[in-house]
Amino acid sequence: MKAVISVIGNDRVGIIAAVSNILAEADINILDISQTTMQEIFTMIMLVNLDKAKYAFSAVKDMLENTGEQMGLSVRIQHEDTFNSMHRI
Image (cartoon, rainbow, N blue to C red; front, top):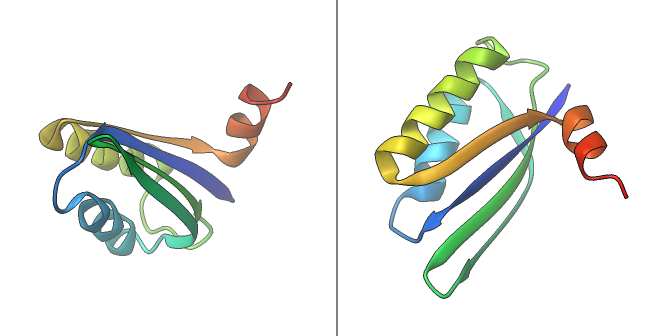
């Protein structure tokens, strides 16, 4: 099972490290990553594989969202199917 993680907020040191550390702790593999900074606004999209995750999806979601709140970021995770359904034209 795959999921899409989006991160948006003011740029600062340690954003990628914070998100990556959560994923590593949960045994979630990053399949693809795209990030950019647009006039001090950091944006990142990750495609991850949840097949070997040692935590439930809801626990990972809470961990990511809590870290985002602490860092002043919006961090969201969605199952790939949900993401694709929401973004179909």
